[in-house]
Length: 284
Ligand code: ADP
Ligand code: MG
Image 1 (tube, protein in one colour):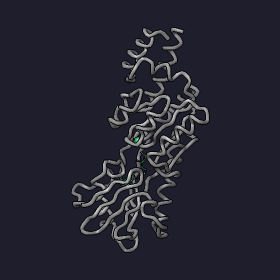
Image 2 (cartoon, rainbow, N blue to C red):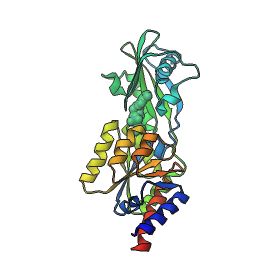
Image 3 (cartoon, rainbow, N blue to C red):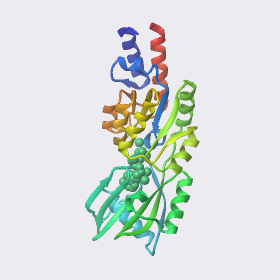
Image 4 (cartoon, protein in one colour):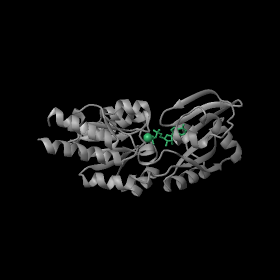
């Protein structure tokens, strides 16, 4: 394509709410065959709500929520925002463990909130059952413990964006294979994937493993676009052949991407691919 045509395409993109970093970006979408989609905040709204608090081992639901809320007040994660109450207790020695959860000291108790791995060891039967049930329903369950005992499970739920399923089927119609990539657990991820028509799911990955997942697809010979919104997605967005960020996402993700979807949903990815194809077709 001529520089002029690419400039025109870039301008047209701006009208569609697709902000393109440089004219050459349009050309790189040409051979994309795989589109990797982050789950939380990209396919889903990323606004989580608290669904259930299941106490364990003699703890009360009130205490589980109170301790979890205090520690999560130090986190910006969507899970944290669902758990924090209006008036959280103060926390000391707060620690964020990316992709796993948080730790902190509340009223002299050492509190841990996050994925089962963060607690080490096996979960009590009741907690495991609560976790299984929540995850099968596509929800995210985090385990709460203090003083080295599991004290409960908090269940949060996210909602699929109303535009996601249609956009996924349009991306398929454009010849792209959608793949979901998430740090969330496999069962919840599969439930959400099924809702929007995605068959391939890479779940339970730690933030640094998101890059590895993209690299692996490239090694298999795929040309990969990646759509994401989070701090955790930034490296993968930069590694992908084409990185697309949500305009509603974090600054780090936006900076790492080639293209920003202003409307903050997957319809923008469809527009971007169509735009690039029509731009290249008209001038070759
Ligand atoms: P995603 O890829 O969906 O954005 P993350 O890598 O941010 O997911 O997180 C993966 C998982 O780690 C979450 O589903 C949750 O179980 C756990 N987790 C991350 N941060 C927190 C937190 N602040 N509190 C509790 N659990 C967390
Ligand atoms: Mg996200």
